[in-house]
Length: 330
Image (cartoon, rainbow, N blue to C red; front, side, top):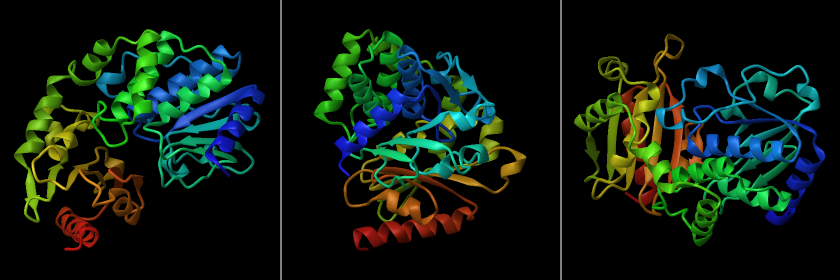
């Protein structure tokens, strides 16, 4: 089935459905949250009964997204869930939203995503690996649905676009990305305000956490693998939240000579003792980090991926060195 056919099917489903429940992956980023909000407002504009689900554990959100108001958000399954069409946004694998009520049989699921390794778990799937972001897909759907891109919708979509393209610096940035950005600015986005919100108006604790990460910087294999490791005490000593590690890996990725950047961070909470979240970034086409992540049960994009593991840190670094070496022939 072609992408155009998939897109037409999803549009038909969205037009036909009267009640919908939207969701995204756990630990949502800017693209996930922006796509979720934009789709919710688009559907409401079309007269649909739309609700959004995120686990209460996701709150508080990272600082940069707290200016958004999530009216229509539920933290538990609605009573009429069996009668609602479920829309997953930016979720490459249904297990990235590990909630039983969203995985039970009989639900009609629309799976809208841009991850190339999406498992196509939906009743109807729209997977566009060539799109810069899920926000770009939602933008295209809005046009096909005949929705008006209001300033709030434009702001949400622009945030998703900017964050997933790394401020238009990553290789997934295309001419279409810039056309989308231009249209959203014309629709009322204040580009400077979005930039300030995302990258400048940040708590001091985040800077202290970055300082901790950079102080632990490790370089392996002649500098090709750049790694930093955050442990629970780093968060406790700086007063940082788990979400304050956002953006640390971009500093690692920028180090000269780096082929793969890795941020390993211990997850907080007694129920997650020993669990580590690993973020991977590749700087060129020689290494597909999504392949490495899938080997650990995770996923993502060729140049940006992640997974969780209980593997001890020294063994984890050794394993990552081996898997990166396999791909570049060393």
